[in-house]
Length: 220
Figure 1: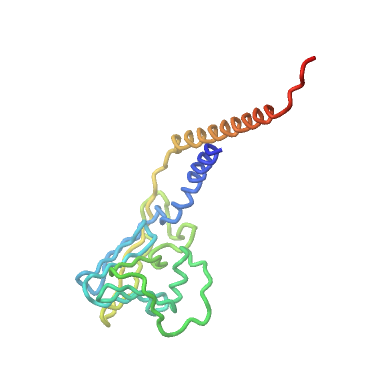
Figure 2: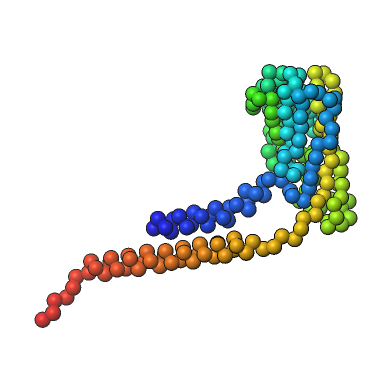
């Protein structure tokens, strides 16, 4: 029975792996930070996992505020390294899902409600301005087998009262035709066979144990 459970667990992990990888960005896209203005020493920004998340790292001892889709304060990085998120910003809720398919609570306050989320001056979030907001290809994509720039994007920031932006580009990247994972297929088939054998052995042992308990007729 332990063998059956172990094999079933490994099979479940193999099946669940593609679902986990689906949340790591779209490899067909490359979203890249091109410029951060104003130029602030100690302020770095980059895109993680192709087009999935925008990262901000502030070690320059200045206050950096990222504005949301409505131009309201969303993320605040303090000079002492404390990072806060405004829970009264719609982006706080919309950024949970890649396509923003969530319900934003009604009655959000007009004043920021800051929630501390870090102390190292670093924060990354799922910003919808840096990626393509559809599961379909962009309408301007002429040939999906050719590398093509899709759009320029910009995320507004405020640095010690000065307006600026993190700006970049989104590019479509064709992927080579990947061969079927033959090794993984055979490994999975092997696991299924082992599972079936284990089930057969367990049943035979149970049948044998049950037969041993039956009374034996005496010969006359």
